[in-house]
Amino acid sequence: MKFQTVNGFKDILPDEALCWQQLEQTARSIFRRFGLREIRLPLLEPTGLFARSIGEGTDIVDKEMYTFADKGLTLRPEATASIARAYVEHGLHVQQPVQRLFTIGPMFRHERPQKGRLRQFHQIDAEIIGTAEPAADAELMAMAQLLLDELGLKVSLEINSIGCPQCRPGFRTQLVQYLQERSGSLCEDCQRRSGSNPLRVLDCKNRGCKETVQNAPSILDSLCGDCAAHFAAVRRGLDDLGVRYSLNRFMVRGLDYYVRTTFEFTTTELGAQSAVGGGGRYDFLIEELGGPKNTPGLGFGLGMERLVLLLEQRGEDKTAVPRADIFVAPLGGQAAEFVLPLVHAVRRLGCAVAMEHGSRSLKAQMKQADRVKARFTLIIGEQELERREAVLRNMDSQEQSTFSLQGTAAELAEKLVALILG
RNA sequence: GUGAGCGUAGCUCAGCUGGUGGUAGCACCGGGUUGUGGCCUCGGCGGUCGUGGGUUCAAGUCCCAUCGCUCACCCCA
Image 1 (cartoon, rainbow, N blue to C red):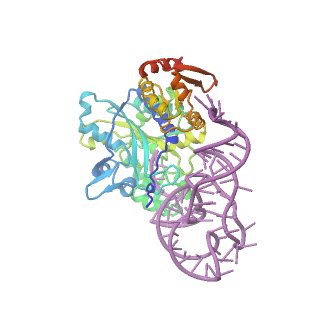
Image 2 (spheres, rainbow, N blue to C red):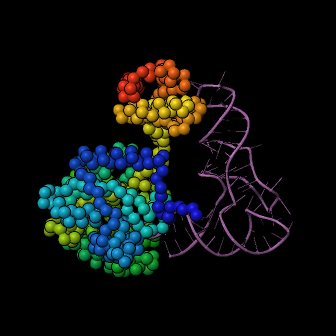
Image 3 (tube, rainbow, N blue to C red):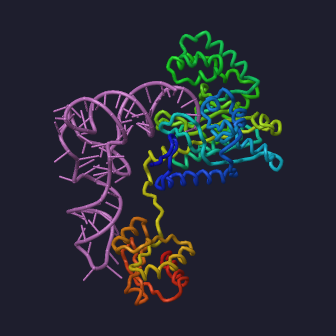
C-alpha cells in the first residue's frame, strides 16, 4: 500500500524549502523594522469564531471550512479571526492598547485545488489592532508594498472603501434597486446575489455583469462623512509614502468583518489567480468577539504559495544551495573512526561539516564533496593516519596542503577552523 | 459543486493507422584515473505502461468503469 498526500495538500521538498525560508526571512526583517511582534496561534479553533467573524453567508464559512462537526472545531481558514480572539482572550489591550502583530502559517479551505490554490495554503499575516488612524492604513499598505519590493516582485495595489454600518445600508438599497431594474442582463448567480449579497455582484467576472455594473452607483459616492474623510486621509498617506495604487470601486472582499479600507495586491502572472494578498479594516470585529468597545483594527494576509510561484517564475538564484565549509573524507575503517570526534569538534565550533558514513572510494567522496559545494576537503587515509598528516584540499583553487594530526580533536578542530575561515 | 485535459523509469518525456517497453535526456551507481570533484567518455541500475474489466490471434495504443492528478468555472491567499 502506497500512501500519498491528500488532494490539495503538498509537500514542500528541501529544494523548494529554501525559497520559503528566504520569503520568511524577508518578511520577518520587514516586520522587525515596523515593530510587529510575532504571535503563534493554534490551527484549530471553535467553529463559532469563524462563523461569527467571517460571517454566515460567506463562501468561506458556508462551504469551505474543514469542520469537525461532532467536536464543534474548525481548521482555521484565515488568521485574523484567531488573532482577534487571542487579543480579546488575553486582554492584550491592557498592557498596550495598540498591538502590532504578525503570524506565519498554514490555513485550510476546502475548495477545488488549482494553480496557486491549495486546500492547505500558507499566509504571512500582519495586523495592527487598536487604532482607527488612517495613517495606520497607509503605513500597513506601505509595509506590505515594501515587503513585495524587497522580494523583487512587481504587483499592483488596488484599494477601495466599502464604508461602514452607517453608510453601507443606504448604498446597498441603491445598488439593489439598480440591479433589480437590470436583472435581465445579470448571470444566474448574480440574480440570486442581488437579493442576498448585492455587493458581490460588483465583483462578478461574468462579462454581462461587468458591463451592467459599470454604471452602477459607486460606494465611494455614498460614504458617510467620517468614512469619506478617513478614505481621503488614507489616500493622502499613501501618496506621502510614495505608494502607488489604483482605485477599484468594484473590489469587494469575501469576509464580513471588513469596513472602510479594503485592498488587494494583484498580479497577472498566476493563471486564474490574481490576488497575492489582501486585507482591510475591521473596526467592529474585536467588540463583536467580546473585546473592549471601540477597538478598531486592520491587517492583511499574503499568500505564500503565490509569492513562491512568482519568485520561482522569476527563475533567479535557483542554485542557492548552502555550502558546506568542509567535507571530511576518511578512507577505510580506522580513518572513519578517527574522524568522528574531529568532525564533531569542528561542528561544535560552528562550521558546516559534511561527511558520509560508510567508506566509499575517494572518487565517490570527492563527488559528494562537490555536490554539497564544500569549500575544503580533508582527506585522511591509511598513510595519513600513520604519518599523522592529512591532506587539506581547497576545492575552488585545487591547492592542497598537509594538515598535521598531532593533538586532541578539539585542538585539531581549532586549527582546522582557523584555516577554513582564514 | 460544475466542466475539460492528462496518467509510460525517481524527474522530464518519445512511443504513428493495435504487432517484442525507448542505446532518450536529467538524476543515481561504477569504470576510464592502483587514493582526488566539476567537464568528457564508457558501462550499469531502474517499468505490475495508474487500477480493473472488455474487444482482438495480439492492447501502452481501441472501448467501458474506477482511482489519481492538473487546469478552468466559482471564490479567494
